[in-house]
Image (cartoon, rainbow, N blue to C red; front, side, top):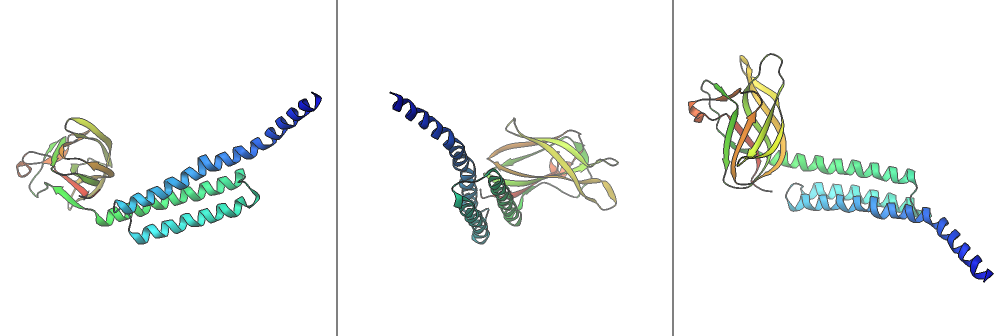
Length: 228
């Protein structure tokens, strides 16, 4: 009986000693390993969607392989310490920023003007610009021709599809008309999949250009790609 009691105590002490190691290994499996899988999946999706070239993807895969090699060296003693996990997480943060930057650059290079109703006639003002899409697109930038006053540098807006709010944000003042520094591009970079339908851009202040040439509709431009 005494032997069984001592054996039970020894087993409990062994479990207590192993718990920190198992917790560290659990962090590796459930935290870092999950982030590695997601990073690899993001690169794979980028290639499949055309958002990454094969060359850019290979550079990102190589960066991921370097991180995996570092992990193997750090795990030579059987586990990752807190400091080592922090280092790996910073490396993965940098990798994810690189993935996002490469995807954005590829989209920018392939971006094209998808629609525009702008013209050179005199402007009157409105708070809305509408457009219709007949096919699905990936939009990466919207612009309106807007009358800023004084030192205004931006204007809030909402984007709705078929009457349903889709996005709210801020359009930032860009290039202005020569000799008329009030009328300027107001734009925001976006990353949206827009399905076929009717869209409305509405600004917080009613100063989007419109005229008879645009059918009374506010001036709007949409940039992006027909591919997703």
